[in-house]
Image 1 (cartoon, one colour):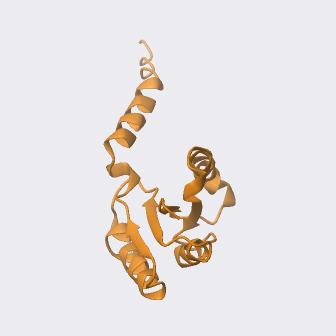
Image 2 (cartoon, rainbow, N blue to C red):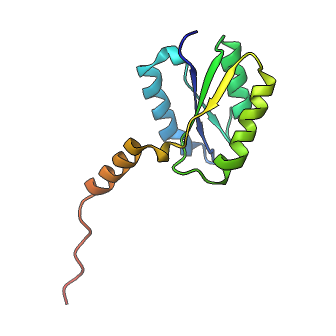
Image 3 (tube, rainbow, N blue to C red):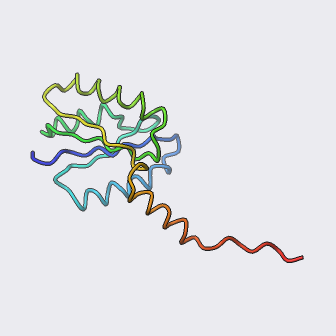
Length: 130
């Protein structure tokens, strides 16, 4: 397969409703690039975890896999824990190339989209007059 498979990687939460925006992002990516076989994986609380999602992509025949963290910043998880998980996956699947993209929030277009959203929310309410 030519294009790297995509794993959209989110933190996860105990409340399943939390995943709804990430599932919408996944649907948009799948619609735009179905050949990338995008899937959603989670760091904790939800399934599949990253190791399972990578194994599924390898089983589908993908030999190049890009993990795209849907995190706003490179906190502790992305500085230590996630690179270790990716390295474990590389050892488990030596025939695959697995790379880790920067956090979504480090991308200028993502920052611009969030700033535009904040601006669209309108001006702050005026303080009550005396």
